[in-house]
Image 1 (cartoon, rainbow, N blue to C red):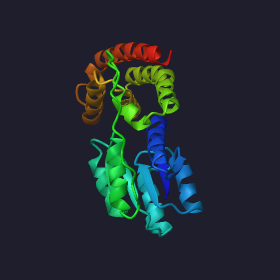
Image 2 (cartoon, rainbow, N blue to C red):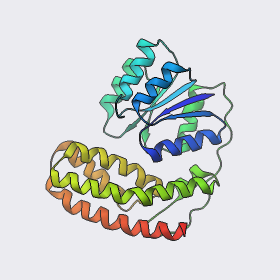
Image 3 (cartoon, rainbow, N blue to C red):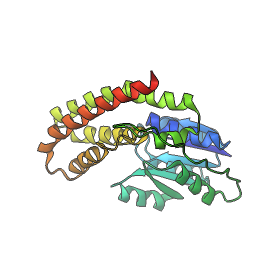
Image 4 (cartoon, one colour):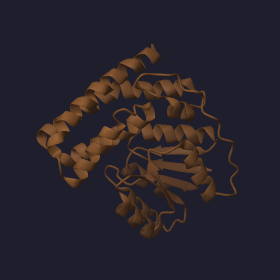
Amino acid sequence: MKILICEDDFMMAKAIEHRLTRDDYQVTVAPDGKVAAERVKAEDFDLIITDLLMPFFGGLELINLVRNQLGKTVPIIVLSKLGNESTVVEAFKIGATDYITKPFSPNELAIRIKKIQPAVAQPEVAEPAAPKAQKLIDLAYLRELASGDMSFMNEMVKYFIDNAPVLLIEMKASIDRKDWDTLREQANKFIHQLSFMGIKSILADVEAMDTILLTGRNTEKLDVMMDKITRVSKDAIAELRTLTG
């Protein structure tokens, strides 16, 4: 079964690719909408999994291309964050088959694929290994995704260690500029990263930040929230470093 993943968030795309490859699917990853459009024009897939918000060519445009321009009936699963319900509804109107809210369990994704492709045999989902107790991080979700593949886990942890500090600096700069649209994109990307690393103590804070940006109210609280998010993130990164040596 050939599956195309259209996702610009590296960690999200890597997690989906790992989970589906472990289930013996043939997986292709498109890191942005333009590449995704090129792939669906060039070859046929049995399933498309696409984010709605992508650079150059959005998820809605991709669905419209597949359904109305190329006339393909391939099932399409839409990836959407909370608060984006109106866009999901529009996706269904133009041809989406199903949707799943990010961040999601790999088990849930497997179930959705099984529902769409009932004829495809699905392997049993392995029980997650017991997470190692940590002060700020809980890698149970990542361990479940990895299913014993330590190289995958190390790659995901290293990506967070290397990229989270940069993203935090960019978020602070967006607050200073009052660039709320950019900050909301950055916050949603960070929500995914925190979920993979199990940093639950500030996950609610970043989600609350997204709500403030969505409503446009209480933006004066963002500086204080950002200070806490940055402080806890740095401590969590220090813990992660102890795991990777």
